[in-house]
Image (cartoon, rainbow, N blue to C red; front, top):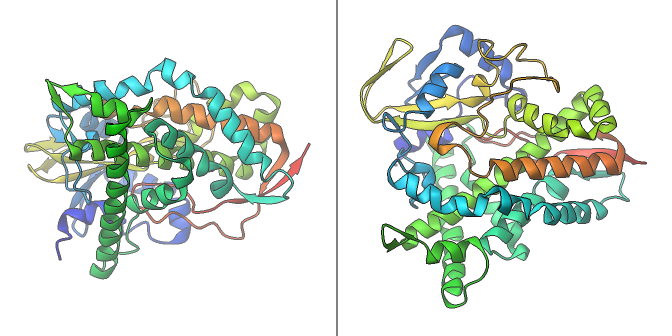
Length: 398
C-alpha cells in the first residue's frame, strides 16, 4: 500500500485525537509551541512548525519551500505550483476575483441568504451548517464556475471527501481515506469534464468558459489543468467559507456578550469575521516540501522533507498577538494567516469575507436570540480543516 506520501495529508497529530481536542485544539497548540518552535513527527514523517515568524518565513519562500508536495489528487492545481508558472496561472484566475467582480456578487449573496433563512424562519431550531453555511458558498461558487446549482449536494459531498482525514494512523484508516478521496476526485473530474465539453461547444459567462479560452505563453490550458482549477476552486470556494460562517455562529453562541455587541452595532461584523478567522481558523495548517537543505529554528531540514505550518498555532502566538487567547472585536492589528501568506495567499479571501459578513448580518437581523441546540458537537474529521459537521441552533424571532 502506497500511503507514505499521504501521511501528512490524512493522519492527525497524536496530541489531537479526542472529540474534545478536535473541537478545541488551541491549548494543545499553545503547549506544543511552548515546548518547541519546530519538531519532527516520526509517525507522520513531517516537520511541524508552530511559531508565527517561522511559518511566515516558510510561506514567503516558494523557491525554498515548494508547494509541489505529495497529494492524494493527481490533477494539476495552482495550489501546488511554483513560479514562474504559478504567477501566470494566478494572474489568469485573478480576473474572476477582482474587487469589481466580487462586488457584483453582493446582491446575489444577499438574495440567497434571505431565501435560505426564509425556509427555516418559522422553525424554532435549524442547522446552521446544512441550512445556511454549506449551501450558500456552494451555490455562489457553482454559479461562478458555471455548474448547476441543483448539483450542489453532489458537489458538497465530494468536496468534503477531499479534505477528510483518517481517524488514526492505522493502515486501514489511511487507506479508507485515500480511497475515498480518489473516488471523490474521479467523480468530480467526470462531472467537470462533461461541463467543460459543454462549454467548449456553447461558451457562457462563467469561469470555466474563461479558462477554456485562456492562453499562457501562447498555449491553451490542458484538460488536467482545467480540471485541477475546477476542483481547487470548488473545494477552496466552499469549505473555507462554510467553516468560517459556522465557526462565527458557534462563537456567538459561546460568547453572548459578543453577539449582543454586534447585534447593537452591525458595523462590527467585519471585525467579527476577521477575529473569527484568527480565533477559530477554518483552515488549521498548510503543507510544503523542502526544495533544498535548510535550517529552521536550529533544526536541519533536508531536501524532500515535508513541513506542516500550523496556522492555528501561529494565530495564537503570544510573540505576535496581544492577549491571543481572548476573542477581541477591538483588536487593532490582526495579521492572522488563515488565508495563507505569500504567493499562495487565498485569492478567494475577499469573497469569503463578503459571504461571511452578509450572512452574519442578515442572520443577526432575523433573530434576536441564537443559542446552541447541540447536546454534543461533532468535529470535522480532518487534519487541516477546523469546523463541525452540524451546528443545530435554537432561535427567537424579533
